[in-house]
Image 1: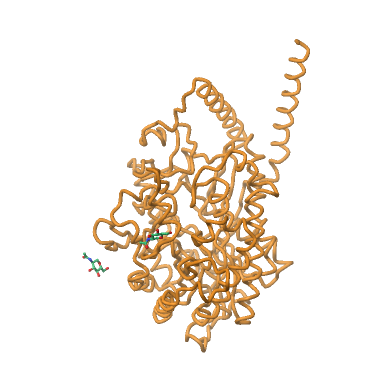
Image 2: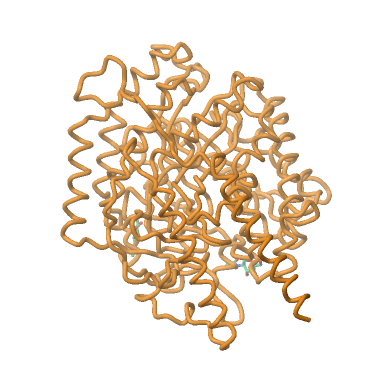
Length: 593
Ligand SMILES: *[C@@H]1O[C@H](CO)[C@@H](O)[C@H](O)[C@H]1NC(C)=O
Ligand SMILES: *[C@@H]1O[C@H](CO)[C@@H](O)[C@H](O)[C@H]1NC(C)=O
């Protein structure tokens, strides 16, 4: 008995030591330090930190002038000049939309999985983009942007499963309405970037399992052919899929998104195996993208087709979290683009920031700045992502261009968003200087929107919408800041200092901001969001582009000891049959930060 116990202990010891060894072996491969180096515009004065018209024309791929495209009178996407844009998605903005999100948000059996939705007036109206698109379009146009990103809702256009072809399944009135909206965009002098799949699957497809079923590929291909035929003349950039791995993870692995319902632990565990939902759905989506790419090019040989790929810089909280970080990066960073890069004219990057992983979850680190939606602020990461993607694919796909298809920050107070915007644009500028062919930057988003399962809690808009006052719109300071940058194409040193100093003095006066994620006193965050935001202090950290510092190795080691303590506490609580973190009142859930 004593011997077998010793053997068990020894086996555990060996496992533990190997695990710790593995962490240290993997450590150098993580590339935590991102050094943008000398990123200033060559020849620019001290006043000008970035000149987007100059950076565009100084590279041979950007012609100085932009001849009008005969079709639209606008700059054609192939006549490349750096552009600025604004982005929306159908599920966020369209009213009269009876989609899976609406059904999900209405809840069933007294369970309401979408937060901050039941507690606002007329949540189903979203931003009335279907009936009154001109409000958003005028706001967008006034900033001076030249590319408007929107989506078409597959389920609105194809109302039932098209067993016998599309003809019987489509709603031609909806087709006509979308045409009116697309014309309204172009008549305001903006080009159209159209997303075909943006986290919304038709109800009829969700019922049979959506992307986990092979037949969805054929249906999507037919839908793309249909969209090309009816909307092709208005579209300058096509985005087939937006952030598919996020969609698959939250829909099929965690049950956070429609249709909801907690998957069994077995299903969750198997999700990432070759037979699990994740691999199956991602393979189907890759296949569908390639087919759609071909269909769009058959319809118009000059079509410009890409995807919007979500990249977060995933980092470990402590040293023992390195294996899970390596796995997460492998799963989410390049895998999908590796699959489809031969079928891309541009690779869209949706970048919001860093994600700090501890065990299997996200960590809210007191020293770091976060958006209301729980994304860590890290402008250096955008530079790093653009550079590493370009390095990876430039040989296999020399013509591949990049567009920042989303970047934005949830901030009701609009105090962090202003420097966030400038610092991320500086990162884009630095990537261009480094030789990455970045064609444009699309900001997320115009007006506060329905943010998926987080409902109306996170405020992503450059414009505030008062849902208690008939959705009246109130532009925030960053709306005017973006307008200034877009119209001049410049970022000035003075501007950068001003916005940073404003934030710093707010922080020193103890400024607080809303925070929408559920988290416990240890800082662990859950996928769940809050109906009413908690509050959080503004972080005292210099996260500006080129200034960010990661903690040292010692800090990473100490943090892992802390995590072991937390896990032991969990074990204790579990043995006592209590589950304390979920029963904390909201104001304590974020801890004393
Ligand atoms: C929305 O669709 C569901 C079926 O999915 C239907 O029961 C409901 O009546 C529809 N609601 C409206 C307002 O059309
Ligand atoms: C709400 O605003 C819209 C314009 O956005 C207007 O058409 C409508 O009449 C307003 N409704 C009320 C009740 O004021």
